Length: 75
Length: 179
Image (cartoon, rainbow over all chains, first blue to last red; front, side, top):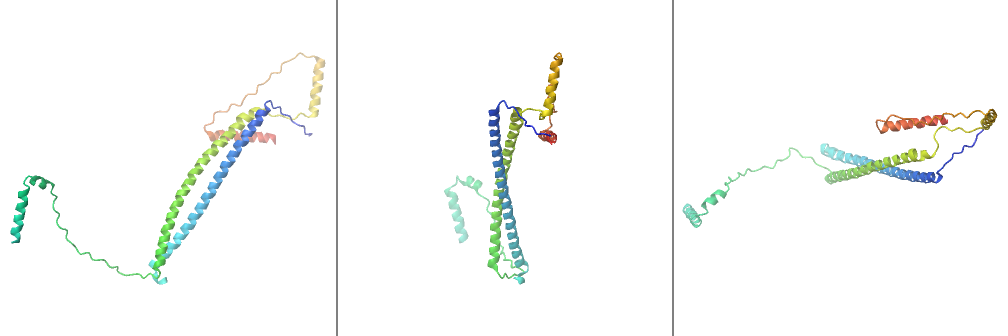
């Protein structure tokens, strides 16, 4: 089928352009917000990782203390 | 002798302040019986454990304490981050809602509704032919009943989710028509 050009009459062309600009601005704002959320999520992940490491360290130290108290001959 | 002296002393005191006698009695606190001093014997442990590295042990305990405090500080930080995130989620929701309103209500009204098809040359030729025939016949002008485009009246959605779902279905059906 032969492709024919379709024309759409836009009475308020400038209004539409302004509206599209507004939509674009809003879209940018939403993108920025999402980026911030992403950053916060990364920060949260980092914090969780830190907690995990800290807990592992604490566990190691408690193990050492426990062993040195309960089985002193090994140390 | 000593007992006698004591009694005389008492008498002197009573003589000096006879008016205070009642008040002093009232205010006088009951004398506590002197606590019997029980010699507390320091309990010695039944056995003792020799710690080969007491310094290291102490250091470990202190470090553990420090790390648990840091952990708790981190928790506070985490909570702040989460609060901030919740605020940002709310902001994002409003922004997306505004976008949706801008597109569905304002932008959509500028563009024509309905399904448009491109007019092909053959169809155009047919239309022109029909118009010529009509001119020849001189048929009385008949009004073609224009069916107004009725807006699809949808029942009010129970909640926002249902509304979004219906919008999604509508868009999907439109997309299928385009394909």
